[in-house]
Length: 359
Ligand code: NAD
Ligand code: IPM
Ligand code: MN
Image 1 (cartoon, rainbow, N blue to C red):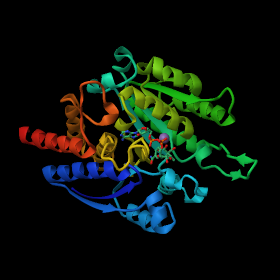
Image 2: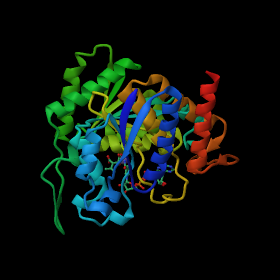
Image 3: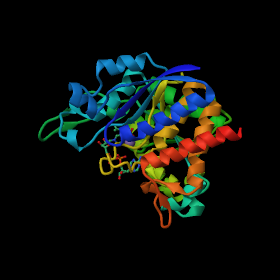
């Protein structure tokens, strides 16, 4: 198959982790006789530095002409004091909005080789297998009006019925294809937007009698994610709650550096992006864990290109390198072999080669 992929390295560890994912994609292309046309473009701080725009027109046009987009991360202290239209994060929000990528799918699954890396007890973390479905183009992140003066600031939280209906449908369909359990997370004891959210979930559930639905408040959900994470199957929630809960859930897997995601609009096209950020504290040191970006590339192959075998090969290679006892620094526990980003990636590439030879 021939596919065009736009790669947006971004800032901080973004270029390091996308470089790793690109090597994996090149290996897959060779092994499975695909042509991946990779085109690189600027986003975030790198784009602000180059052309004073966190999402340049040229980036949008390259992305429009591609079959999928792979992102590293954006942001960093260099741009933290910029006015809000010149912040790297603005570029990421704008690309999600531009392409209508309303559904952010964030799988969180315990990895046996990493149970010791989680601060949770093994018996709590070991059965975790959930997906957080985060609404991505609405809510506090986008609604107008917003305003800031020296002594007054305003953000507006708006959700419309169609925005809620489509993300709730996405989550019901996903739950139906998994263990049939949906937790809808809101703050309906306080917020009107959450009351509407809850009403719509109640209406929608009539169409999915095979899915068991529970409404949960976001504060106690944060607690239950740590005390009983194995109880969750699919979680659906609004933009900001989903942002916060997914970083919390990453701890269960051992590191934020392990979590991939897909930002989609229901047709496969999407932005495939790690959950983590640009990690300024370790950027440029060849220390970052590239697994989240590599696993995001695997999600891209599966969701955007229907390449199930290739996606599974990548996941298997990542898990077997971890099983063999090779880790990046974020997963360090006593006695483990810690590798750099590039050396760890080489292990994954070797593993892909050996999987292929043994087929
Ligand atoms: P962060 O996710 O960048 O880092 C949080 C902690 O996790 C840091 O200690 C970091 O070293 C560690 N970490 C994250 N990813 C890692 C990886 N792959 N390997 C090893 N360790 C990893 O969050 P932050 O520090 O709150 O934010 C830093 C910047 O990133 C900010 O500018 C923020 O806006 C931006 N950000 C961007 C995205 C994105 O581009 N999708 C996501 C989150 C944050
Ligand atoms: C994420 C990030 C972004 C978000 C920021 C960088 C805008 O935290 O992808 O989780 O909040 O959506
Ligand atoms: Mn986040």
